[in-house]
Amino acid sequence: MSEPAATEEPVQIQASLVPLAKSEAVLMLEAGYLWMDMGEFGKSREVFSGIAALMPRSEVPQIALGTLEFVQGKHDKALQMFRAAQRLAPKSGLPRAHVGEALLFMGKVPEAMKELKAAKEIEPDGDGARLAQALIEATEAGALPPQAARKDKQPR
Image (cartoon, rainbow, N blue to C red):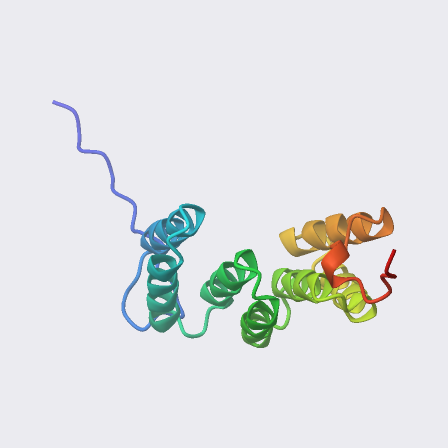
């Protein structure tokens, strides 16, 4: 007879109000992103808001809420959510990169570039640095900001 397999303790989220395994948080976030991808923005907002309530000290749900606003073209609201994430995790590059992205889409290029460069400096090897670099390259190539957000556009 073989011995039963040892079960691993689930990794708990430290900043949650109730005991919450990391796998459970990931599953809830995935559900929110799935609703968002399906265009069910209200359902997605409910999921992300619930996760934010469960994990009030985590920047991750704030980034999700910001992404939800961003995909709907509500860049000013997205910026507010990304700034909230930035306050929760000031040493993380990802919230700063998202702040820079929102600013780019609002046509605030100098301010955006400052945030993107800061994202690269804070965590040079992190996801935020990679996103920031891609956004900087897209801006340098002229692909960003979108034409509608360009402050220097001239009528034809």
